[in-house]
Amino acid sequence: MAEEKTIELNGKTYPMLADGEYDCIILGTGLKECMLAGLLSKKGKKVIVLDRNGYYGSDCASLNLDELYKKFDKEPSEKAKKKLGSSRDYCVDLIPKFLMSCGKLSDILYITGVTNYLEFQCVDGSFVYDGKTKKTYKMPSTPEEAMSTPLLSLFQKMKYKSFLTGISEMEIPGEDGVDSDEDVPLNRMTMRQLYKKYGLDENSQDFTGHAMALELNDNYLDEPATETVRAIKLYGYSVNAYGKSPFIYPLYGLGGLPEGFSRLCGLHGGVFILNQEIDSIEYEDEKVAGVVSQGHAVRAKMVIGDPSYFKEELMKKTGKVVRSICLLDHPIESVDGAKSCQIIIPAKQVERAGYKKRESDIYVSCVSYKHKVCSKGIYIAIVSTTVETKKPEKELEPGIDLLGKIIDRFDSVVTTYRPRSNTKKSGVFITTSYDATSHFETVAEDVLAVYKQVTGEHLDLNVDRDEEEEEE
Image 1 (cartoon, rainbow, N blue to C red):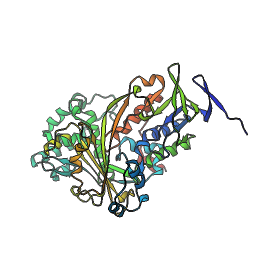
Image 2: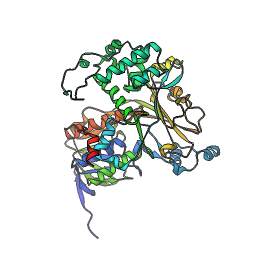
Image 3: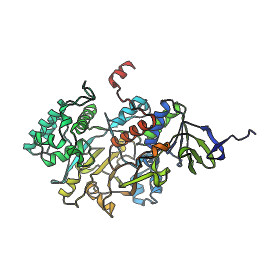
Image 4: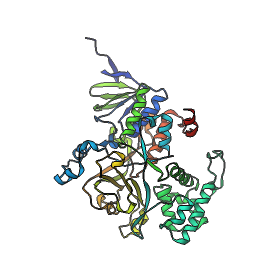
């Protein structure tokens, strides 16, 4: 029998895990971690990925029905069993997110070739909740839609049409032949001033900022208008790409995304080991040196991972997110029979509808059997928001009230974290927790930020898709 190879780590000798030494150790197979594994291995880094779970996806996994009930320590009623059908028909996302069809995550999927492993469908509609009427409406994204939407008054329709027409013609640094460092007029104007210029009232501003530009709060109003206008234009481009909404979603659920990036990593020599508990992260001279896992050790000068693998002293709590996974046997009534949709309930509209005042938006995402994530006739709606009170589930009421009768419901409250700024010096890079939003733009931004910290380079997303497709 061959003698077991050993490796020294922090003054101790351990049996060697895999090849023993890598450029980077990644802890967890969540989407962010798998994206970074794929990107770094494609760049030539030697990567090993360890996960304590026996499945890919970590906190953003997609589970079958039996796994879902087990995770939430529940048993389905006999009535629910009959309605819901076979467990293997289900791929229920623990964290609901849609992809912007022309957004940063879609760009990353494209330039890495991960789109070859996945099939996407357009989400049927993107809606916004109006607190005054207590109804949801399709978010207008073109001058023509602005004139026909019941979301706006006749007076505001004209102004909104003018606003969208103006937005389409505005110069953005780094786009449409404009130099990235050019001082365009938008740089010298706040978004509040831009809204005022076009005469948009508070509600029109609210719908635009939160449901179209996907702003997380109202701080953007007093910042230079450039980035918000960029986001609004991206929304419009993404709608034009598919026609129904700006969002797309993979068949068989979001769990396919980390698996796709793990395949990319494997193609470039990356190693994945599941069911691998982490004993400790080891340091030498205040620099990370490697990881001990189930009595075996592996060395690397960089460790990347999700917050659950690190000591709290390396992170800062940013709050809590409450989510409710709801199984339905009908489409959401207020979205015109859409088989899939996103609904954003801006915080100001919550109070306007008569609910308790809050600071954070509420997000509703819905997918169905059309996306091959559940049995025929079933819909999966997930409501989420940032926790602000001691009764988090009650904060979801404005979203839950839109759903109608629920077959079964699975609630969770999770603490969210971000890394402290000094972890980079030691070679540790921690991804941020997933927020309450129902889209991937903040996820992609975090991945790009960590990639820049690790490599010292920006990831080039400037690929002409049409040109590439013609070459193929």
